[in-house]
Image 1 (cartoon, helix red, strand yellow):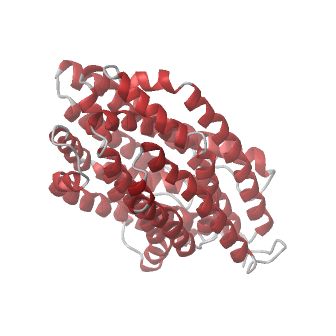
Image 2: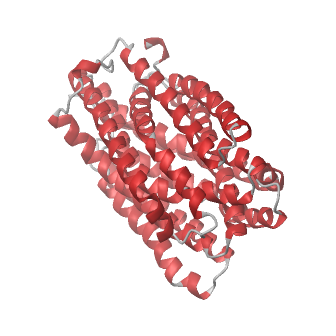
Length: 452
């Protein structure tokens, strides 16, 4: 496995960042295909109500899951810092603390998700004709969520160590299985949304086993020994210190998205179907941008651990430039081919496609602004400052969107007004995150300093 590791501390940054980021983009796209395959299959064989049922679970699912995925960010940053400062014991203890944290997080989510799925969906105003299918999908999905937690924590560790290729290979395998099972469960067994949820769970189980096995085969400080798994107090404290603010931030992002989804629901099931399909297309653009956030976290994390602060600043500038170009290109392509892309998901409602096009225009075209916001947030986290970006994001994204929904949207109750809140929140939050980064950097040496 050592040959797959990429040095973040030496050599030209731009080609290293590109080589590191491309596998993350491809991996994220494959991970997103889990849900995309769900929507495409149910849209083709079950109709737009089933598409709305699957799509309506996304906001509440993200609200619950993203908090614990934030802890995986804490694990990744902790490993990156340890590798940068060459503290092998710290790295090993972090790895053996991270996996039991993932398992406990997954079990907790299973209990809550299975028990309260219908209650949460009703709170979001899910239409009664959609509710039964949404509830079934959500319960099965949360039944296997522990696999997803294990994968995310282990993949974060591999990426912090410079290995972005292994998660790509494992998700390719799992993605192929997911598509095959989707088609089999829906077209042969006629399981509708239950079939696609079960297919997703099985494929996530496969990816979790493979990524855990990869850690067990490593030859460096990141090697996992199952019999050594335990909570190390110091490492758990650091994971929580960095990960909890990241998780809270992600969850509060999701709260604002839940409110937006509830507002989407107020326009009816046809609009919900178009919005769900559009949201899935947007996801492919978003994960490509978010890959640069992950790159910024790990490159800056390792270089901050090694006290190579010039490379910290250079990494941020390169990631900001790359995310702008990628966002503009992919966002424009998504809008230009929007009708054709939406027709992949929706085959029985031209009006739903028209609604989807409205959302694409307001979100995909300026999506690079979201990428800028995420990269600046990742830079702060890589430096170990997690509370500051959390507070800024809560106020700039969550607070602004909630304020928008209960004030401006109440006056101009239109889809255009609703979706424009995204752009405004991205711009404001990015500006404040960059200001915070500059303030944090004032406390760092202006020249490279040797590691302690």
